[in-house]
Length: 336
Ligand code: CP
Image 1 (cartoon, rainbow, N blue to C red):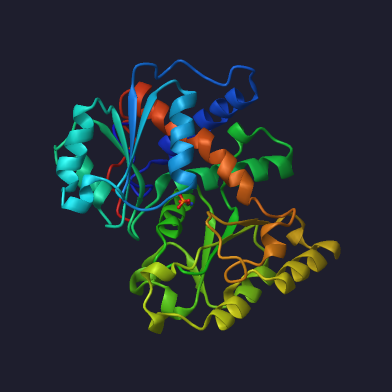
Image 2 (cartoon, rainbow, N blue to C red):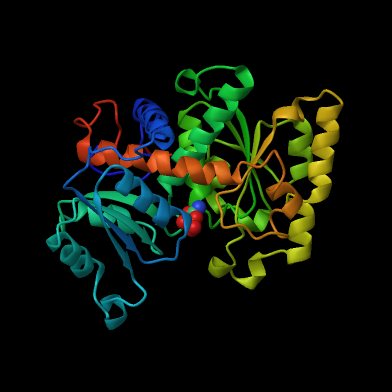
């Protein structure tokens, strides 16, 4: 694998290979010496044109646990403010020895541009581009779902597949690269996905996507899901006209205390909701798309997702910088 730009371009074989490698990487966490020497002498550059806490820091931790050198670049405070282009910035960082570039950018397609333009030879990882994709978030979400399913079934995560797992992706789908990457990856892995959103926060083309669409979160929860993935409301990408009022949004599409109580009541009555988990990629708008009661409940996997992100990003960097040749089965540009 030379680059990781999207999950739409990821074959089932490659995706499962990455999840299995991440399982092996997570074992490093439990060792006394938490470092593997496999990327010694290699340099990973974190090239972040948009803010990030989880993704940037976990790529940094992942690279360091594989013994790579890490250079972190934040556009704020750099020569980007003087008008330096993406091409010149990337070439400058490669001249400092970058073997892999992890890029987050506000423009959809920026990672693809960097990888395909020939400006640099380094491998490129998309750490979130506009509203397009966030492939490592989807991989860590799939990793979390696989571990959950394995825990419920009492099986080994590495041998557990996600066929038929029911996932509701809820909220601001329109602006969400997390929703898109999860939809493509979960579909590839055989999951059954429902998108739940206000009509104004669904893209026009969503009717053609491989997912059921619902506007009613309570109905979807009552039908039973294995996981409900709450999306951050992206106020920074939104026009006021799109948005139901915050109060209406929280009441109709937020995972609030009442919905948590209903889920707990349904599971106490012996329903399938006993095993339903609540996911969120972070950062959370508490009180809007998710209430504190839900975010901090035993059903919440928010912090497990963060932990799993390090193992998944170790697997991605390892595959990019020390892995074998491209898997023949990988279709680079599967059109979803
Ligand atoms: N989930 C996610 O991408 O979080 P950050 O913006 O903090 O990286």
